Image 1 (tube, rainbow, N blue to C red):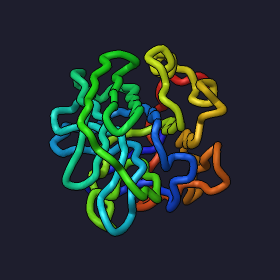
Image 2 (tube, rainbow, N blue to C red; image 1 turned 90 degrees about the vertical axis):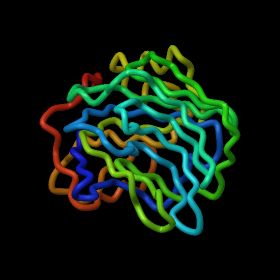
Image 3 (cartoon, rainbow, N blue to C red; image 1 turned 60 degrees about the vertical axis):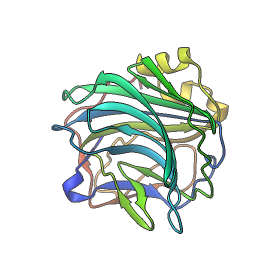
Length: 220
């Protein structure tokens, strides 16, 4: 796992969104907070890096609840969980965006919450971990905490599959043919990139996300 810090603007990113440019999409990661949450944080995002604000992502809101959001500024649709994840423990956060009017968020394999606001996201061209292009041409909504096993599928995963991920199944064991991105974030120092097991290009680390003190309960 890698440790991200909002104050240091840490992130991992790649300047293309290959495999994740159209719906449906599913998102998954493990997250452990390192303090109180007072601002929205992005954990895994597919977004537009220039011209306008367009994004699909999972994250945490100002109340410490998991979110899954579609954002075409100024319109957004957000599914919001009810479980507080700002407790310093590892939590699995998942999201499924099945269409422009269907998104769901999962916390620890359950607590499924949905949203049906119509939002059409366009022209995404980058993927970020621990941040998102929340301003035109600039990263924001940096994460405070540890992130591991970030993954994106180009398919709508089922409730049962989200529960399996939360129970410790590695992302590559769930619909592997549809797995578009998988960045374990094993934190192999001193490298400046993190391998993406599904693509040739790794994620560039910005402002040195450190190594977390422990990893989540995912089978290897």
